[in-house]
Image (tube, rainbow, N blue to C red; front, side):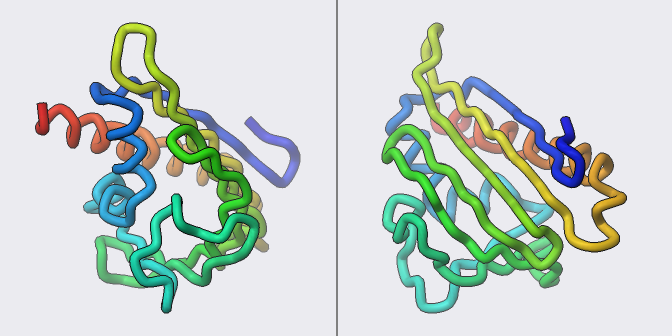
Length: 161
């Protein structure tokens, strides 16, 4: 969907695991990177130490998290800012990136009716400069990337079972 110069999409998947286990995975750097590999790896902001989404300062930028294509080539950064946090249930990131005026990512975990955890991601992107024209394409590519992330998350918990 689009609101002029911003686009958004949503993805939802049932993960075959307890919400507490899924939460611990999705807020850790190891879990985030496992979801994104092999396409992208994200660094931890310099000086952040053993940071997780659970331990960030809500509402304050935590520094630049570099995005590395194929885990090695820097191609963008995320000035990571978590603006809302409900531990065990939900976080909302509202950041800027080199390529994006605005980058919003909200992830919600809820118990699924048939067991497991419903993981819902809602992403809003506002590209900078000439990338504005590529908004619909970026939405499609990033939507496919989040499909990939959800498959990897399900696979992680399926292998553990």
